[in-house]
Image (cartoon, rainbow, N blue to C red):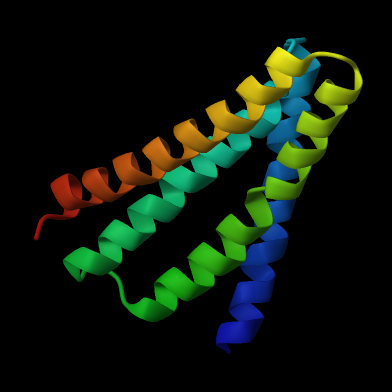
Length: 125
């Protein structure tokens, strides 16, 4: 049952990523891949929150496995972030490529930490 739920949530995460990506790309044209940054940041925030919820005892390990691996795994997209970074570098936009790679790393790790902190505050220990 866990594998089935993980697969279903993985599909839901990928579909959500498709919708969010299209929504951002259709509204803003930026010099950085803003849609992918938003997707990976919000996914990291959610995964951090799930991890924090597990730490507080609010959810069990199976919820983290199913929602974290399933939904967040389908929703976030490290490979797209790296392809977009390479494309920026290939276009000669080296500063933007470095900003995208390292900026994404910093922002997503911070979002995960914020998610853990939010779970701690909202769900308490």
